[in-house]
Amino acid sequence: MRFGSGFFDLQLRFAHRVSDLSGMPLGDALLGYTNFYIRFGLGRAFDPHHAIWIEYMDGLARSADQTAWTVRFFATRQGLPQPSHTVATFGCFSYGHRDAGCLRLHFENADPDGQAPLAAERKSARRSELRALLAHVRHAEPQATRLAGVSWLYNLASYRRLFPESYLATAKIAGGRFRNMPLWGQFLDRHGTVRTAAAALFLDRLARQRSMDDLVQCFPLQPLAVEAPLSDFHAFHAIA
Image (cartoon, rainbow, N blue to C red):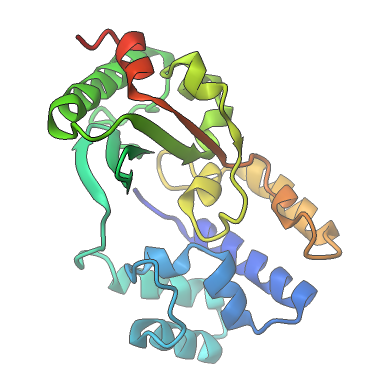
């Protein structure tokens, strides 16, 4: 996935507003309310004393252009081994373990044809990938009985059509996701460029925010958490 400078700029603006509203130091806002720590390949410990994080923060404090510095710093982290909880990948879909009986489904634009991955003409490709993932899981993960997901994508009809109704019916807003791509991913198109309309709406709401209450309402779409038995997916996708 590509990340243009606008992706980092939006999060910096958000962190500054969080800092203003809460009185917390900017560093704490960046650590707790942006995707930066994860994007820099530092895992999910969110340790403010991590040497790489300190290097980033030191450079940020000296920089006249915080967005440019963040983009440059992110570039230095590319190509390095990244922590991953992914077990197996099938095209745009992958999965990891949430707990002993439940797997976590992930989606990333990996369409080899460079098309919009959820376009109508790519529906059959996405369904094939899901069927391959489910067939693999049936044999490789005998302990798993459920599949779960968290993403802003569950707001979109083009994504929802890939899943059984019983799964979608469990959707509920997943709060406290300020550090994660299930929230921030909604601002990116398939080229890594920020979606202008979504960003404008977000910034307008952010400017009018007067407290830390309901901060998530600044975001156009909310990340939704869903979960259902794997047997429902088997029936929906005709996995024998």
